[in-house]
Amino acid sequence: MQSQMRTGATTDFQVKLAETDADLRAAQRLRYDVFVTELGGGGTLVDHDAQLERDRFDPFFDHLLLTDLRRDQVVGVYRVMRAEMAERAGGFYSASEYDLTLLLHSKRRVLELGRSCLHRDYRGGMAMYHLWQGLAQYVARHDIEVLFGVASFHGTDIAALAQPLSLLHHRHLAPPPMRVKALAHAFQDMNVIAEDQLDRKAAMVKMPSLIKAYLRLGGSVGEGAFVDHAFNTVDICLIMDTKEMNAQQARLYSGARA
Image (tube, rainbow, N blue to C red; front, top):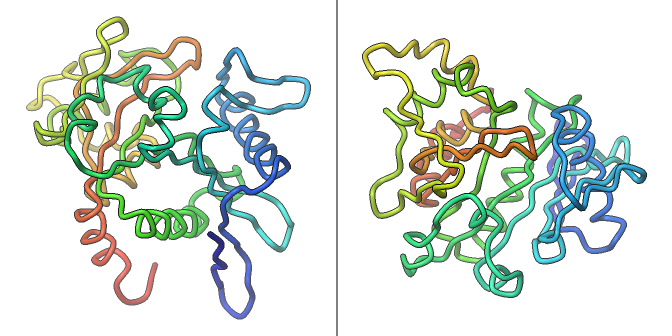
């Protein structure tokens, strides 16, 4: 899969799947810059000498790369895993944090998303839109019906995250047939603040931009958060029916894009 996204009269961005070891290392290098250097994450397979953020699942995922052709630099990545790929990997990455039984028994074609990040110079612009367009092509090609994956809040201080976690619990829980639950050993109740005491503005200020974007596209979340001390994050499981996403995209991107 390869596509080029045009901005004005020039071809600025290219989205493609990683095809070589060099492609994968470029993705892992960007992930190191974001998840390790910026956010203080870690992991047993992180290569600090080569500055590569990696784990045992990488060989089993497809890796979407967004390249700025003006710089010949990978500036955005997404890794994606279909059910048949998860079988070869021994399960989905998210299964280490959430009980995925409801999704896996749903008889729907699912796709796990993970390790999404952008180079700091490309946040807040059109780069994420281009990366999502590449993801949409992948979803269509493989007839995916449900997207899911963990997304993170930086840090593990629940008091500091009480507003956004509570907002997710009260207003964005997934429908019961898709409401996966965080595993008991690190389960964090997101119902920290009563709904009538929520400060929605304060909650949205602390909500990571990726999570906000999924919510705008009709996404929902599983029950409970997962506290990942090793990676210095509090994780939630995002779930999205692609039919709902497509309807929301049509509304968001109809006509001229802002």
